[in-house]
Image 1: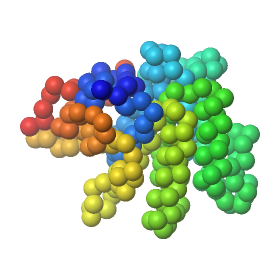
Image 2: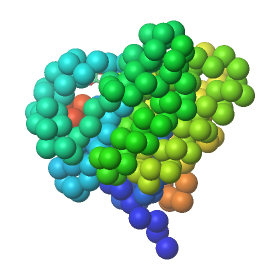
Image 3: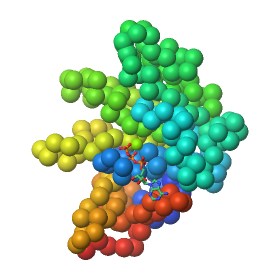
Length: 245
Ligand SMILES: Nc1ncnc2c1ncn2[C@@H]1O[C@H](COP(=O)(O)OP(=O)(O)OP(=O)(O)O)[C@@H](O)[C@H]1O
Ligand SMILES: [Mg+2]
């Protein structure tokens, strides 16, 4: 039996993963700067609201609300309007970076002297519950977990986050910067997540091409070939029938 799917609403990409992300699962989007991770997350949430009547939460750890909303206007997505409808919830979690001191997200205190992952998690859980969110995006994850220098602690922090995201029942996407050290080309968290989507720029012939690849998608007969994608006024478009070479 094929697991229930939650479509991203990006036709080419959905086709690569049998219609969408397995319902209730967590997918990591890994990519270099400017590859479109934030955009992909936004499209996932906005398409959910517009096409599938599913509420969504976007947790932003880096970009502030004003800048992000402005950037999304470019794609004719009016986030203020979606927010007023109650279907879209924006969480500005950037105060986390400003610890120590009391750390707050909206009205929630998530840490006293320094950031607590548990506090963050509680906040997300409460919001997911009160807004009945079916889709949650955390963008980007690095800010959250790189404060744990120890690999074991970092792994545990990520597992805690995964566990609570899973408990919400929502289908989730977390973004992650691609590793810059050349010793390995994946991030540790990929082992733990249910799926990984990789976005990158590649030189093909003389041209730079944007390329997307499903590196992992549990329970899915995924197309694992790199496929080209474009970003234009309509957002991200994936060309699932095109090969690169
Ligand atoms: N109207 C447009 N037409 C074409 N490309 C666009 C348009 N608007 C934005 N872009 C491109 O989309 C990308 C924005 O992607 P986004 O901010 O989602 O990337 P990101 O991977 O989240 O980057 P970062 O790592 O800096 O957070 C940029 O590379 C930008 O050039
Ligand atoms: Mg981004």
